[in-house]
Length: 200
Image (cartoon, rainbow, N blue to C red; front, side, top):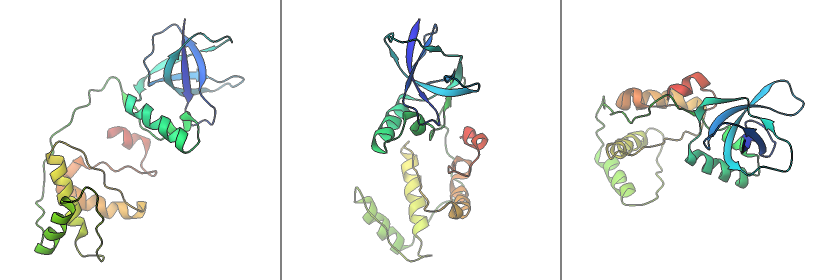
């Protein structure tokens, strides 16, 4: 029999120990029953542990979804920094599917961004700094600088995250980004359905 420390998703409970005859990898999504409850819960395998000196419930099933090692590390940081359960922290993430091969696809750029001399001067300054802030009036052309920078980062084989202050502003910015990056844009916020998130 094998014993595992599990984080119960969307639960304030601290990690619990369950048993299984299966060899289960860290980060695997499993189904369990909490004591005195009828409905099952989803949980994440944190690590394999030694046999405890108390009776353990058995893991019901192992799902196809899993959390990467990096997700587990970030989840651990979140739980300690914000003083919440690991289960709450990991609930913020979208799982990977074991049956899907994830590959970086090439990006086709639909539109070229041409900067004015003023915009190029601002971009050159930003590029020369490790960290920088860009201030300008609404409509001054900040978005073009952002998009140009993102495009250069993507061409280096890296990734870029564009953060918006409000969900209500997302549709307009999504349209601007898709004019350049087409379907390579992935929108992620609390109003996006779980089904759509899985497509990303």
